[in-house]
Length: 172
Image 1 (tube, one colour):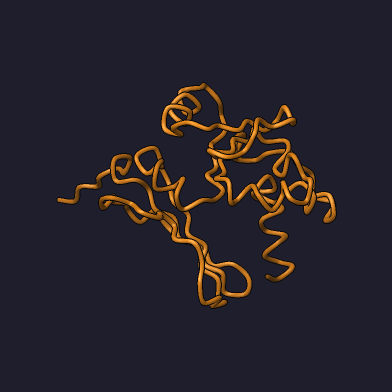
Image 2 (tube, one colour):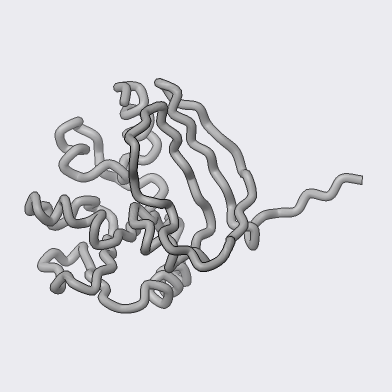
């Protein structure tokens, strides 16, 4: 990733950079778009193993795991049950910020009915393997193209809106 691309993220979505990276880069942690982040166990695990208890401070952090004990950090809530009612409760809160599903193909598949927007970041690097966006999704779900941005180094962000939230445009 180029310095320009990292600077773009630092300027527009600083809260999506892990706290220790923001600190190293001197990026303020004030959220711009999100106030809450959702993670699966595997997404949270590298931070936990590095003894980083709150990887996305100052966001409220929810980790969905059947195996982790309760968090010792007040900013991190470990949820062992169904993620859907938790997310529905979070979405019902009146806030001017969004909820970010940071990672976890299993978690994303469980929450597919609650996802309002998908941003796919296409990088011009081929790794050979990875995590499916929605692992084990039992049925098709439709999203509508909402736009794209081309970033430094050829990184493309493509945004889709859940079909249930899309606005129909009628031309006559």
